[in-house]
Amino acid sequence: MFLETLRLALRAIRRNLLRSFLTVLGVVIGVAAVIAMVTIGNGTTAQVKAELTKLGTNVLYVRPGQRDPGGPTASAKGFTERDIAAIRDQIRGLRGVAPYNVTTDTVVAGGANRRTVIIGTTNDYLSTQDWTIASGRDFNEAENSGSATACIIGETVRSALYGAADPVGDSLRVGNVACNIVGVLAPKGDSGMGNDRDDIVLMPIGVFQRRIGGAAYIDNIILSARDGVSTATVQADVTSLLRENRNVPFGRPNDFEVNDMVQMAETMTGTTRTLTGLLGAVAAVSLLVGGIGIMNIMLVSVTERTREIGVRLAIGALERQVLTQFLVEAIALSISGGIGGIIIGLAVAFAVVHYLAVPFVISLPVIAIAFAVSALIGVVFGYYPARRAARLSPIDALRHE
Image (cartoon, rainbow, N blue to C red; front, side, top):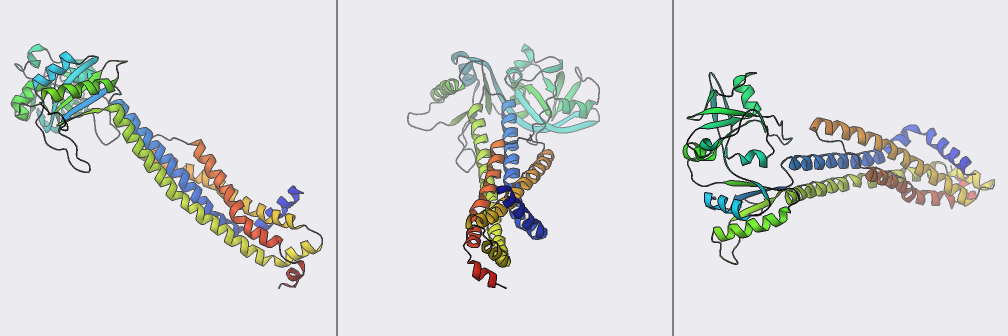
């Protein structure tokens, strides 16, 4: 009996293919929009998480000032060598403590030049940021003390200024300062956020402060915790130590920030997940529009087929059979729209994530929910037209022109 009802429903759909296509188009667009938005959002979240992981999950960033909500960082004096020494000596569980200052300047070698990022730091910067040296060496004791100028360059700077040659031992001019190239960093590639991580030059922080930056203060500190050491514990210990060293009165807010990469990663991924959910919710509104379209067309179909319904009821068809037929028609339309929406949504999402160069992360639960909702739309919005058809009086239906 059900197979016969299904056959009649499909025949009625085929009878008006163009109208049926236009009817399901709303559901197709709704399902496709939900799946595409969620898939793209998941890919973006995965990309953000991967990029933050590259910075290290056991890394903390310390900087002076406090970031005001919705505004820039409040100014405060930088850190001193005394702060760095205190952290090294008194904080347990640290693998490295790397002070660093940053600026941009032009580097010149022979007839080539390039504007790049100049970082004044120590050898600990290499370990805390997981840099390796492809050729040459790191800074020696004399260079770290500031009595000799030296620099380590990134792969982008090397290729731009020296081509395929090995520049170790050559002289490089950074701004107005000549330095000897002692090493070349192994390439890391693009960060995925528009930054070329290989477009850098490292210098000893003493030389940087004296001849490049012109300030005695340290602007940033990177802390790397040993494996198995809680970064939350390190964060609390560093905060307490710096409050004491910087004479922050009890009850006053810190004049510095200690940011845990684990917390930053959770915050960033949480934000992208929220945005993905909002986009998915907005896209889901079109599913409601598609359901209203199905109800509208089914009501029109009931009006057009009133005489047919009357004949069926007159020759003995039961109300539930007529109800089932029209309900199956509505469900078939919505399910076909759901399937089409899934295919189109995944195709659109694949094209977009390929263009954005983010991972293609399919959410099977979202696909299942979108398909189930499309089927539910057929039941909800198809029930009233089907019920109206089933309750027609056979005599009135047969008189209908």
